[in-house]
Length: 244
Image 1 (cartoon, rainbow, N blue to C red):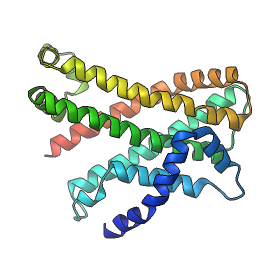
Image 2: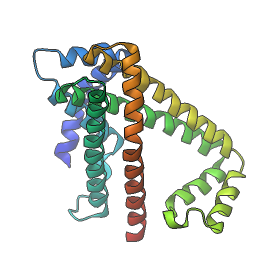
Image 3: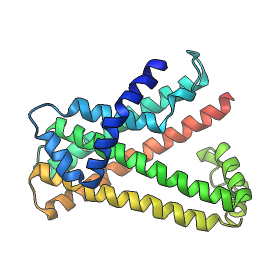
């Protein structure tokens, strides 16, 4: 644990500088890294790793080998790896449909930087929205936290009891305002991701139209992957609560 924290502290200055450059000019910075003389894969993996450590503070975890913390962390890492490989496969397939074969190393580098920045920015914005919501509407906030702490199995998602609970929560003060602010924050982050898609267009050396078609194909192919991952994450949350 201490070694991981020390490694994180040493990597932060370089990480912050790289984060700023890629955030401001994702296409220019990522393409330059992919086409540099040295392999950009190690740096990209480190960047994504630090991003995940920022989001998942290991320093607060238990040091016991078989604690619930490590079980949760292991599942989170496993889902991230599986989801990442699936996304890379869908990316490669989307471009392959257009007759473009991108190098796996370039796909991996672009994916790591884009996912790392998207995750951190979205988390910061969502925490800001949640903080304001908790300050101005504490009762509604506590009700939402209680609802999230007791996820309903998919088999009971549309039961009369669950639907009634959902309607009661939506009727509480500030709920729709919070939902609107959360959606705005999410779509602002999504706009950056859409802008960063130009990285793949530059790497593939194609027109904007073909790049847009590749994006549409990717979203269509990625939808079932997202559904499967969302189901796995939900089941993991239910398993955590059952263990408690």
